[in-house]
Length: 410
Image 1: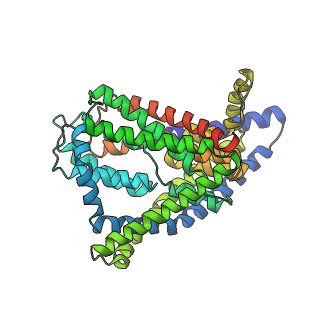
Image 2: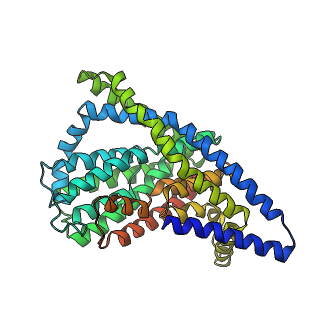
Image 3: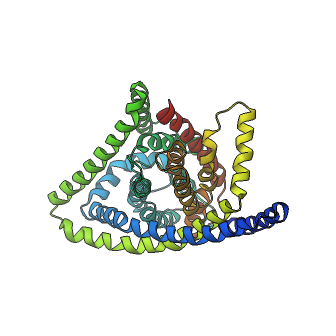
């Protein structure tokens, strides 16, 4: 899917450039394309190298979480919940702790740390799957939760915003939390209804109610705050939460007599490898996006949508952030590149840059998650997984647009 899209963007861009040159007798479009290729290739290297430090840090923290036994404690606490939502999985299955670790990595915004854990969790869930060619209910639920993926702390988005000059890199924290929560709730409810999970179960109901109260309280509380103070407070909460989590992990590790330094180094060593792994994908997508933009292809599509919004008397400001939304279900690196490109063109602190970041954090890459997770266990019959995941994506993206207007422009 990504290969086809990538080639279509390249060929479409060149064909459009040729048409432009013939119609307007203007060959400068090819100069723009070549310049975009070199500039965006260099940008990809710069961004990838810039991520080495932050990835190493959080992979080190995640290793401390594992070795300190915190992950196992979380698993035990959540076992009653998993017995309700994944009825076919035995309570002593190692899949539960692996699923929890995967979700913890997603909560922290560590996409590249979450992926290997997610693959491992899928393999462990497969051991309890009676039909090995078809996705089980537990696997579909897990995939949907990954595709919607509540992002508690979108670390990489903060990092990109900081690198590109945002005054307050974490000011997107609360809008992302709210929009990704909507995506997850929609996805979970769709699967729960399909799988006949008893939503009135006391344990499940308690978790759902608590989740809704927290999200509603944050939303209503920020709505009551003066508009000019919302972004500042959102940024402050994000920073306080980051510091609190780090401090809590260290305290628990010390209590369990873990050598935090050695443990951290062991985990952090993977940071460089992860950043290098990202590099070719980032360069590939940034280059093709640069070519797409330089040929004016993307501008034509966005202009068409913008004119439609104006015809319907709808504020069209958000349309310039839609490239991120359109790419998000297809390619994580592509959506990330779109977000970076948008901030480069409009500014990290612009409304368009703001909304592109919120969209990026609102949901996960559905086609990537589906192909990698189910491909790892050779499951070809994914049943209703893709359909429900895409509905969740749509809910997350629409919510991202709504909350961006609420926090930035209200």
